[in-house]
Length: 638
Image 1 (tube, rainbow, N blue to C red):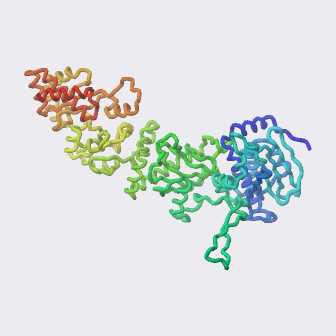
Image 2 (cartoon, one colour):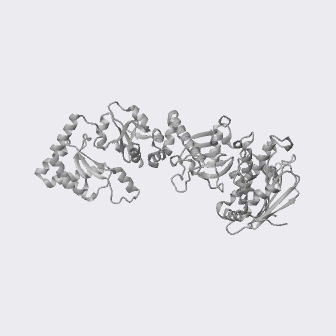
Image 3 (tube, rainbow, N blue to C red):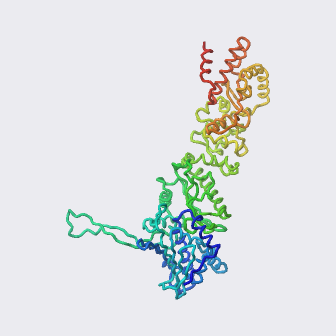
């Protein structure tokens, strides 16, 4: 019996695959079970036109048999089997896929190729068995053949093929499990509980039953003559059990599944103690076909803001788990969404663990993004209380979605945003704000800070609120960036209450403001000279009403943005918001400074310093020297 050698390139690929391509040894079982499912698909397809097959779809099954004494794990199917030539071609040449050829052969058939789900189309998965086995034996008998064949290999040194006796059509894959090492306990792959775990994790939705003879325990029947002191007795027994559920809940019609079933699936699958806030079912057919079942959690996961949290959906190909978390299926702003996507159209690389960036995957991701946003918009419209719960948990993510990716997604997300405001303690959307705007209001106003109650009391807010205009209170760090990226909403410019032109002025108001600035120029120059480099400028405010002073900024960086960057310990390179002290020319203190300039210039300087410190306190900026400020107040009191 001559041993055949793998081709040189196949040998190199086999070595690479065993040691590098697959990062998780446990997936070997998934690969072999997928191959078994493919073999049964092929014979089931043949049975549609060949009555002599003698089997219908309900007769197909996969049997797993662990043998601890022999240290073997056998996976048997009653599928189409392989001829000697197919055995040599499919297993003797790595990357030669019988499943792929089968699908290609359907191209001219009455049954469309895309209607047949064949999982293994690359021809490498079988060899993952060598990660856990030091010898692999394949015993097979093809449909329509009277002869069986045995293929045996220990890996890189080649393989042998011999005739053998085999009862029935199908294939047995026998793995002789490697000896245990310090780093790897290979014997675990012979344990019933471990096999059940792997089937449930990776192959739960293969369409054929995956069965194993399981050892179980049960209570013996109570004897009829048992007395009051009878103690229950237990007995061990074995029973053939199906380990996979076969029909995924996401492939069932929505009308055939209750919300309670969806909730149970979500809680079991993703380990959440609470039911999801929203369930999104998607079925698509066409250029790219897929089923998706998505969930919006009802609260923020405990690890959501940690490095350990992984975004992504579980990706299946025809019911077989391909990736535990496929990050490419969700944009970052929807990273909280959980769920599964099942498609026969996704293109796989050498290993099912490594996914290519394909057009199909991008199409699915784009469609899911649109579906999720549509579902959130419907929730906002139909169930405001539920949406407010969602917003409390994940609203910040949508705001980050606006500012990320150079603002490319702002138009998709702007109608989902909510903000606190002077007219709504629970929050308002930009659309609702605009609908409430009086005709005289030119801008959508906002104020940034850490506390909504304090923002409503800012000196800059007084005149705007008195005019009957609403102000958005932005209390999250991302809010100001969000406003700058949005720029406007439905034709209305977003305007900070700190802006010098926040309130439009009539010609008479502009003329009066210019006259105040001209008449107060001497006071402004004195204040600027007193403060020196502490401020960029001192000017008459066009927004203050009764308050004497406020601190604003000029240039691209606002005061709130500077605070945020400092909290992040960002390297600002000495760059900071350019402070401008605005004073109210109508406030009595302005005339007090003017009088003091003539009567007591040193006291006038103290007044200026006091106003500057008060402006810092109102803006929630740190005092440069709290002790000096205390001494300043005390000196003026004396």
